Length: 180
Image 1 (cartoon, rainbow, N blue to C red):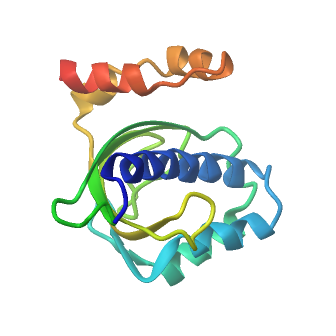
Image 2: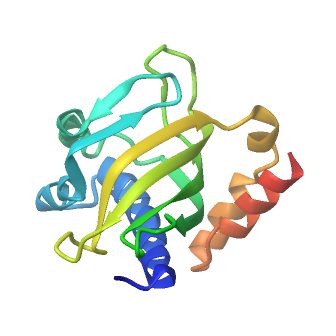
């Protein structure tokens, strides 16, 4: 049995680190071996449902390998709210996180311009010490578009400035969520 609070902290670190990977990968700042570590985080039967309803499995995630260096302007700001699944002994964690993106390009398979977008994401994560780097395996992920009012309330410039100072945008993302 794992301490539920420690499980939640590990999963919160993982969610943030995964999105840092995306930004660095698409900017071309990582070695090719980093992609293998990225894929190792997902269960073999991983399934994600994107905001427009597209199902993505682990094999399809592997297709992102070819996108290395394709978008150095992409920014992602994350605010995580997770909790241990009751009666799981801290082995499973779920909750939501806000994912605010700028410079993403066309983020919808339907072709809508979503270069600036926000998502509410609901992961199901499993603690497994054998998974690197944080001992967390992604089992499922469901995403939905953040309402436009919440996205409009987020100040990407202030978030970028906070990140440059070594801070993060979590508090601002939370405030934007609460205002809408």
